[in-house]
Length: 128
Image (tube, rainbow, N blue to C red; front, top):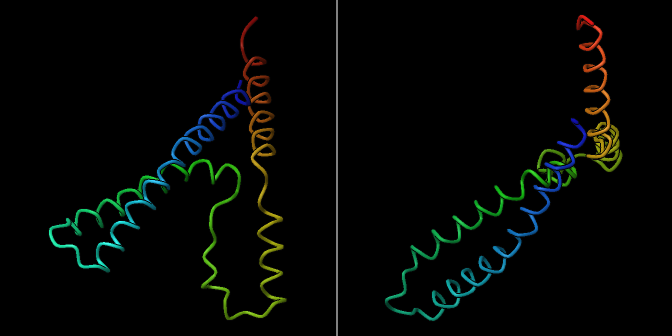
């Protein structure tokens, strides 16, 4: 039951991420119009509103993709902490991170196994 719930959530997050991908096209269009109009100094264009729309779209895209990216371990890393390190040190950090990172399927299997174990223990406590 737990595995079915995890798979359903994964599919839901995947659909949300796929559907919200179209927001990138809207974001690109708004940004291009804003940049071109600023370059040519178009008078009367609501520059502040366009820029706010860009920030709102960035926020929406990030929020709608965050859950799915976490499930598939595709979240971005901030490399500013490791940029001064040598190649070997970075490789060890990545190796350790990859060793700890598990795929979403492995996590769902572990959750399902823990859920089945819990159900078994609870059923043993129930009076017959």
